[in-house]
Length: 76
Image 1 (cartoon, rainbow, N blue to C red):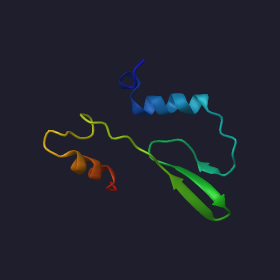
Image 2 (cartoon, rainbow, N blue to C red):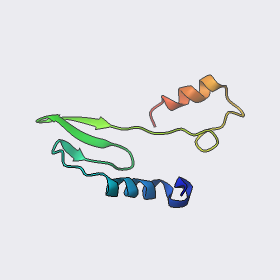
Image 3 (cartoon, one colour):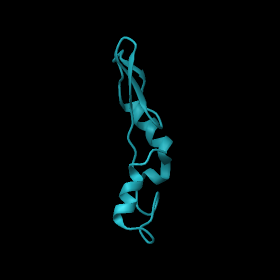
Image 4 (tube, helix red, strand yellow):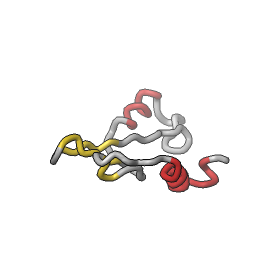
């Protein structure tokens, strides 16, 4: 199976079904953009990651590797 055949959200659903979340500090778990974890009462941490794939999210035909890499660090 390829991710392309089920899509990003299909992949997320498959991961959700295979993972047991029992930690009470997880306020909002796996999803599209981020998870919210309570570090201590009243203090929350947002955790996120993303992938930038050449040919999907950017192309190097018109940019140097430095410019393409710099784009990944810019908030969206």
